Image 1 (cartoon, rainbow, N blue to C red):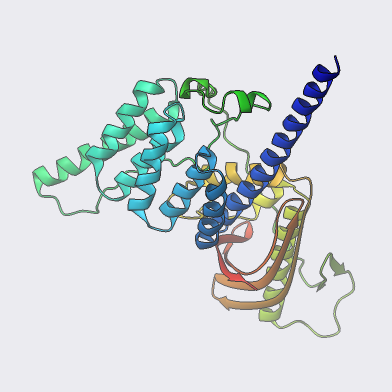
Image 2 (image 1 turned 60 degrees about the horizontal axis):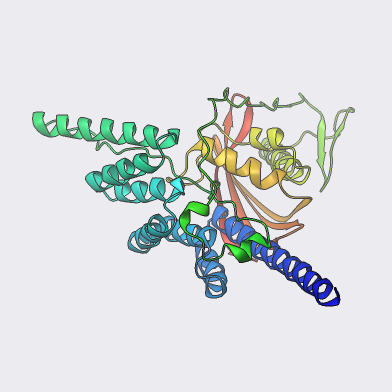
Length: 353
């Protein structure tokens, strides 16, 4: 009985160790996803390669490696990793979709079509594959029509959706992980059917509060409006700068409060993070990134503002801290004055400060 008791204790300790290692690995890959989201693909590549040295067959790490290559314009490297995922993890639909998108971006439409058809054989219920295939066929037909009639028009390119996360991958909990480490691909989680089409995401429009002649005092945490008239009127440019800073600080405050609807309302409907991601994909990714954190704190300082008609640029030092990640970067927001007020149309990061 004593031997059996100690064997059980050893099994429990081994399982706890596996859980700890898995948690650390997930946190490290969360950091990689955050770096990719911020456009810091070089740092993401360095970090994910370090993870792959310890876990060379981790499908989520391989997927993030391919994503970083794809967003860096390293098409050949991205293709190689996506093909590796499709070979060893055929039950995952996202690598097929992204491989097709890489081929389509390079004008290799027949290869993209072949990949999507192959994906349909394995994932006939994954709706986004059908959508991408329809988009690709429409583009190929339009280009063929232009060539046939020798039309001189804009070059038509397909708009294939790209998966930003390996949502279909779900590693089994220990100790089953240890027992199934060498299991065939059939042990992977089954692909779920596509969810019913959800209603469009409600866009919350922040009212553009523009008091007629109050004095606006902006601090790091609050925007105080004095009801008494100022002794001397503000310069129009300075007044507009105050409004811009109030918008940017409100954006940071909504991010810190993890108020996703308010946070997204600061962005223009025309905002797109990069050519490989649609607005809806970006909103879905931001919603996931913000809500899954236990806490977030965003502090801004060292502002620099420039105005040019209906557009403006606000640069600042951003200090971000959550329960699993922290960094300090120099960021620039480009805003446009619209009917609802100043809205963010572009967002760039200069790098670590």
